[in-house]
Amino acid sequence: MHYIDFRSDTVTKPGKAMREAMAGAEVGDDVYGEDPTVNRLEEYAAALLGKEAALYASSGTQTNLLALLSHCQRGDEYIVGQLAHTYKYEAGGGAVLGSIQPQPLDLEADGTFDLEKVERAVKPDDYHFARTRLLCLENTHNGMALPLEYLSRAQALAKKQGLKIHLDGARIFNAAVKTGVDAADIAGFADSVSVCLSKGLGAPVGSVLCADSRTINAARRWRKMLGGGMRQAGIIAAAGIFALEHNRERLQQDHDNARVLAEGLSSIETLTVDYVPAQTNMVFVTLPPEAADSLQSSLAKDNVLIPAGRRIRLVTHLDIDRDGVERMIGLMRTFFS
Ligand SMILES: *Cc1c(COP(=O)(O)O)cnc(C)c1O
Image 1 (cartoon, rainbow, N blue to C red):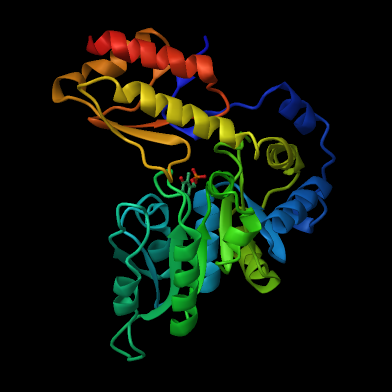
Image 2: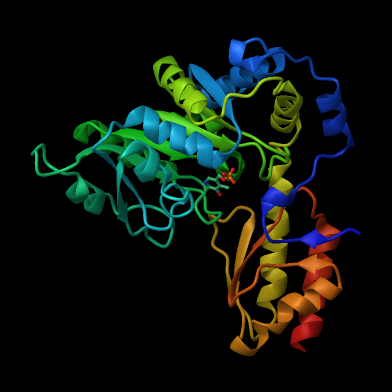
């Protein structure tokens, strides 16, 4: 059964060529540092992101946690967006496992911090307070690419306040394609960057953390402690290499498809479509209340999958082509007519 699945870009499945790369991967014991494919992925990712070193891990949640644990000590604090993945969607790992206090702040509508608010949130050096050590940014946030000028101001602020920056770049290559700026230049505003291989890039599993060698060495120890040391992981790392080699540039197609979807849905009167120029592969749609319950099941009968709720996020990715988008628009027009 072929579904057109708009729920997330994590649903992408490896195609034939990626599976062949996995099947043919040379492997070894990565805990001994002897898996040539994992080593190749880490070197390649580090080079693409312009960092000294990289570490392969099971998920973006893990690479973000490794970054928190490597940058912060017990009793330190990180400033993070109220709706950022590294605060809201990672089960409180930094607090639970690192005794690191989050200081969440509201993000602006475009996914940026008001940097004056960030500056006010940095705590003075006083033993009443946790030590503010780290600023966490997210690019893309809700599918929006952050402006470079903003990243540059954030970097200047961090420098002035003695903070490190961790960039949750789960979709940094979407941001790179969108802005036409090299991913290494975007990552250059941060001390560390986490990149998901398993979203729009299409690998079945895995993320990489890229940073200087000292940070990556610390992260490698934490990864082992968390039970994240893997053995013949080259089998899955091969998919990551394939994804980075073949699926970065094509993200443009996903962005084009999201724009076509947004335009098509905008012509349906009862829908409110949020789609801004900085948007990459997501479209947010607010449904009329009476449709919120029935639309999902109606589309599912036509093998089209969407999330539940009134304000839904539709995500384009490499398993949805232009025909799939047109089909979705047609089904929505029929449903709302
Ligand atoms: C998906 C995602 C992650 C990591 O998620 P995993 O499912 O743990 O790989 C991190 N940050 C953002 C913004 C994400 O969208």
